[in-house]
Length: 502
Ligand SMILES: NC(=O)C1=CN([C@@H]2O[C@H](COP(=O)(O)OP(=O)(O)OC[C@H]3O[C@@H](n4cnc5c(N)ncnc54)[C@H](O)[C@@H]3O)[C@@H](O)[C@H]2O)[C@@H](O)CC1
Ligand SMILES: [K+]
Image 1 (cartoon, rainbow, N blue to C red):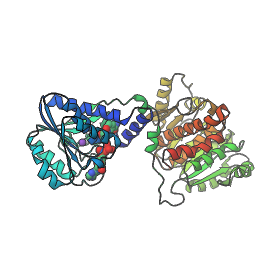
Image 2: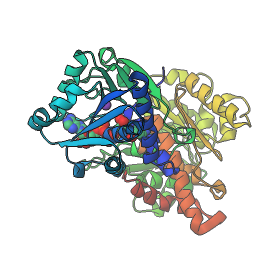
Image 3: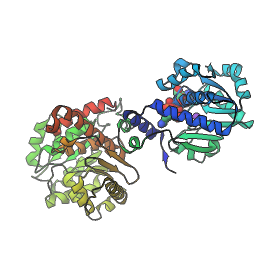
Image 4: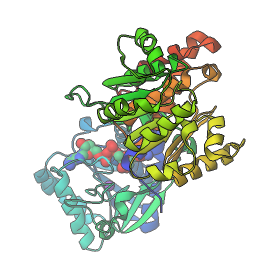
């Protein structure tokens, strides 16, 4: 069964919100699913919800309200904490609605109060619903949560049904490890199976697992969105120069703008140091574009094998190589690209560098070099030696299969970008028709390299596609179809700042 990590789940939630499907709607559906599971287990009787102050508790507030509206149930709810400490507006809103429902509520702040005032609530219940924590658990379990879990387990040992919301409280949603956890008879988890529920250790705690649909729509999961940016590693606030990425851009020769755009985009996306290694006759031109660039002059007018020794030194002192922009396709240039690749640990290959990739090159690099390729449809056709399909579904299949076979991450640029590592595939629809102007692909390559220095290849490529397109959309607001690659470049920081990932 396909599992989902808690981080990915959070990203999807956020993407839903950005598309207009609010967390409170998902919470309503989650709570309704829990109420239905209680009804299936218990025809009538006393139901006790034990709720924490997070959204797992929020699901319990909804479920308690739904159940109290059905005849035959006496519903009580223990809130572990004070109402004012409820962590999210959605959970707080649903807690506030309980005063109009037939749900008796008690607020408990310490374990002695749990013993003195809520012990009877536990013992008289026919069924208990565990909503102490869901996927938001962190660190050692504090009080009164720890005692609340012990009391739930005591009732479970007495033969009562325990239903856990999303995951048995205490269980790590991803690794499945725990210090203590609720022993559930039934776990109702939302949207997808959580990896932690499948671990060997977790099995005796989850009881039967039911996956409940809560209305998350496919677009939030299939398309990149601000939620995906949330999952990027942040720059270390206490880091030293270079910790947030040292990027080596190898490009230029016939052209000078392309490597400069890629290098500046890498800086704008947060890299600490960017060096542009460019052929001799464009070195001064590239340097003149910006004082932010470090330019290393290569030996000739085009990239050639004589540059190998200087390039290998540079590769060793950088953590990502971004190569191809404006290199041209002279045979000695393509040969140099091929000879450099085995020395790269992480590389983004764009434009002319893609023309150097033929035969069994990917196979020979497997295991040594983490590769992202960023072709457009024409370059993708050359890479595969096959026409790029017209229909989106066939294209997605082609990108997925190519990535799996060659062991690379592919970012196929188009109206809708397709990003795949062979296992995971995402689509990106930010961007606009104005971005067909020259240079936006160079910006994307630099952005990708920058994110790749701090993140896994697939996430870096998917988020770079999103940021590049979103920056282009901002640029379009002002410049329309007359937008330039430099306009896109200028907007990158706005997107990154807005997403709070800088
Ligand atoms: N699509 C989704 O992912 C949805 C998630 N929802 C629910 O939201 C849950 C996640 O909510 P949250 O992120 O708010 O987190 P949780 O509700 O799982 O936990 C956070 C709360 O637990 C406290 N806490 C964390 N670790 C603790 C510890 N060691 N000792 C004591 N207290 C601790 C925090 O202070 C906070 O009050 C999911 O499990 C699910 O039940 C639903 O509301 C609907 C949609
Ligand atoms: K729970």
